[in-house]
Length: 563
Image 1 (cartoon, rainbow, N blue to C red):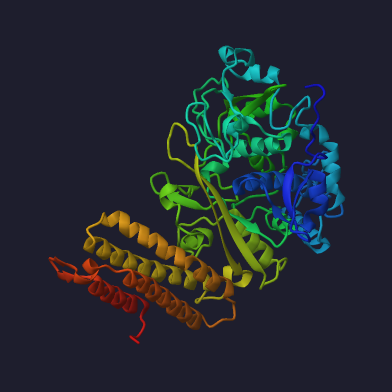
Image 2: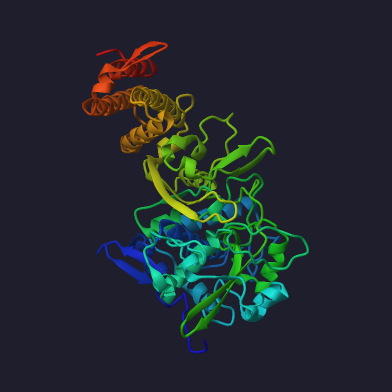
């Protein structure tokens, strides 16, 4: 232990893709921030891992640039300790200064040396084997938090490396058959990969581990914070652009939100101070703390034969009206009248991002929709002319879906999706005929056609004497898969100056063509039973009557003339 060394600021551990060579590299924090403009994207083992690391990087940037401007000078309205100077602070001036910092960084095309200086000053906080090990606790601290019979010496409360690795997520009792590793190799990781999985595990923890810290009030172990939201973030052409687009320096989505001092977890005076605050279950009031929040206290024992990882749950703050979180869509719980993250589950696994367009952008003022903070932030940048009106904005989502089992919540699937539009389209300010309203209209009639196709599939299933619901659901899923790329391409091609009616008509014609092509495929694989059909209460039903009924509904719902 004493001879081990691994510091995240100087040792390579973050996987990236270099733009010029298209090759994967592993870099340190300092190297990444010095060269973010030369990398295309993060390239870890999983997209969800990349998201967890992205939030860590943003916590560092948010902390630095909420204190220093792009020239690394402290804002005049902050004291030497970066607390607000009440005598000089003005809310509007501070917002202008922060947005000016963002603009200067964007124009410079790279981050200032202040980020590297911050990392060097806090190097001890990023030492994976230090006196205060990164994202871990010492034996003394761990033993002070948990019940006596769960202390390290007792050997209880362990999670295996293969459980920490979210590509495997194998507990001691449930083997992962289709894992990328087998046997003892599942518990073997180089240090750089272990660092990545420790960060990921804190964000995407399940609830299989039973050990908890001691508290006055009972609590249940919670899943990791990002595991229970529906993530959304912006993606740029480079890692620098991605970080910049998601570098929220002004909270424009919460009423009465003002500048707050950033406090990532490593800046707490001690880990005991952090755990004391967590026991109160108070939602963080700053993004750096939220982005670096823990779901477990982890203690790693290092041995020649491997590692022992001890894990204990800590109280998690609630999700109701946790609107400071900018990277999620929300739904209104009508029972409690509170906004909660619109979490994706196994049943909604195949629903593409564009089909929930109204969750990302408020289509009508009267809608009970709370837009994701990141979308409101992008809108502020566009309104302040810090991004071009015709700039392509790509919204991404990466969701790690749990198995739905209340006693495990182990990862069952990972979903990644995106949709791209011009800034002027996404944030159309035209009165009356706004693009978001027309896009939502297009999605509505597209899903109506999807329902028509489902009924067609149900008819085919009935003719073939199959399990109608299962068969129709499968055909419907395939049909929507055929729609995803064309609809996203249509969205991407929209411009603020386009004739709305012409663009809507173009999509209607494309949609009809997709239906025709899909039905043709079904007709070409028809069987004698499909042709002869069956008798129903409504009369004969065969593949031809089913097709005719579908095409009639398509023409009616798309208001297209018969050709």
